[in-house]
Length: 212
Image 1 (cartoon, rainbow, N blue to C red):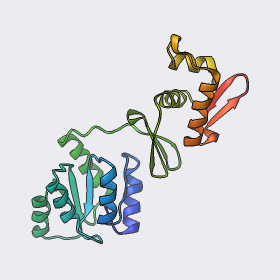
Image 2 (cartoon, helix red, strand yellow):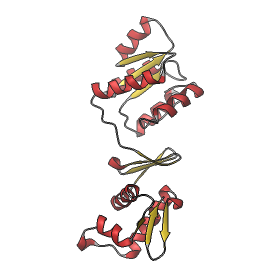
Image 3 (tube, rainbow, N blue to C red):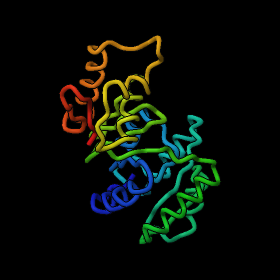
């Protein structure tokens, strides 16, 4: 949560190279995100529109939310440091700071709180695939895949730029006694194209599919 649009974009772009990150500009937007998404780590600036980052952590703790939280602030006094820790923050970083320092503090938090980094794959601009959650995030919206859609997409991603015959796809995803009809397979492919973009899955008529 950072209300400076330039700094917020810089931090978000940098951290997205290592983690999955959402950016809120103020406490109201952060609260709305927290209502719908479970996060592994929170990074809050102190001075933002609405309630401060410190007060937002205090409010979360009052609802028994124990998500680890790092406070970032331009304040240089021990009083704000004390308030941050009293509210429930576990770490504190002062502005200006190097982006690498923030990442090191995040990695330290991962070890301290046993946070496992979720596997994610970049499929395109504003398009991420999270295999462990069977989910695609497209333009900030989370889309849950059906089990077979997930298996097909995983197989495509594991074998890019290669012609995959219908027989190969079916044999590697379905059990022998549960083989799908051609119409069923086409339906799954059609749904995936609607989610990730039709240009990602090419059809070679009579031969199979190619994931680009």
